[in-house]
Image 1: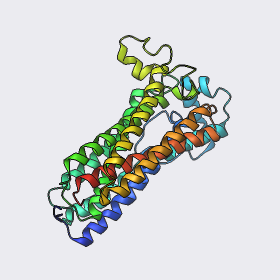
Image 2 (image 1 turned 120 degrees about the horizontal axis):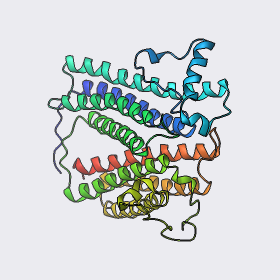
Image 3 (image 1 turned 90 degrees about the horizontal axis):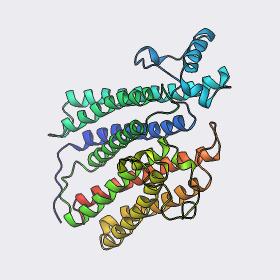
Image 4 (image 1 turned 45 degrees about the horizontal axis):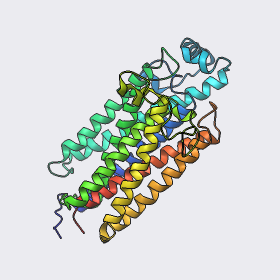
Length: 352
C-alpha cells in the first residue's frame, strides 16, 4: 500500500474543508433552484442584467409595473403567459431574482475566505492556483447565465446549447469543490491509485457527466414531453424520425426523438458500466462502500427517470407533481455525479 503524503497542517485543512463544504452545498442549492426557475418558466422574467443595481427587486408598484411592461415586450409573454396578472409576474420575477442573488452569495462566500486563506498562506503548497481557477469559473458562470438568458429574449425559450453549457459549468464547479473538500478532509493525499480501477471509475464518472449534459438538452428542447412510454418509444426501439435532420449531428441536439433516445440509451450504458465497476471492486474494502452507494444511486436514478417520463413530463407552468418529480430527478443526478467522483477519487488515492 502506497503511503499518503500530507501537505497542509490539520487545523488549516479543517477550516478549508468547512469552507469548501459550505460553498458546495450552496452550489447544489443553486442547481436545484435553477431547475425550479426553468420549470416554472421564470428565467426570462428579468430582461436585463444589472450586476450591481439588480441586487434590489422593485420596491414600488410603479417599479413593478415597469418591469412587467418589459416582460410583456418579449415573445415568451404571449406564448406562455398572455393572461398573466401582476401577482403572477411577481412570482416568476422573484424566482429569477432569487436565483441571481444566490449566485452573488456564492461568489462572495467563495471569494472572501479565498482571500483570507491566500494572504495567510493556508492553502496547500502548489495548489493555490486551483482554488483561484474555481473562483474564475464561478465568475464565468455568471456571464454564461446571462448569455443563456439573452438567447431567449427574442424567442419563447433559451438556447438548449447555452442551457447545457450553463448546467455543465455548474457541475464542473460543484465537482471541483467536492474533490477539494475531500482532499482537505484527508490532508491532501497524493493521487497514486491503481490504474486498473481508476480507469474504469474514471470512465463511469465521465459517462455520468455526459448524461447530465444530455439531460440539459432534453430539458432545453422539452423532449421529455413526448414519447412518454417505456421501454419502447411509441412501440419502437428506435423512434421514427431519429435521423431526419441534416447534417446528421444536429439530430443529437435538436431532434426531440433523437435527444430522448440518446438519453435513454446512455442511461442503460451507465447502468451496465456501473455493474462492471461494482463487480470489479468487490474485493476492495476501500472501494466496496463507495461503489455500493454509487450503484444504488444509479439504479434509483434510472427508476426515477422512468417514472418522471411516464408521468408525461412537465405539463403546467406552476407547481405540480410533474415539476416535483423533474426537480427530484435533477437533484438525484447531483448525488449520482458526486458519488461517481467519490468512487473515482477513492480509486486514485491508493489505500486498497
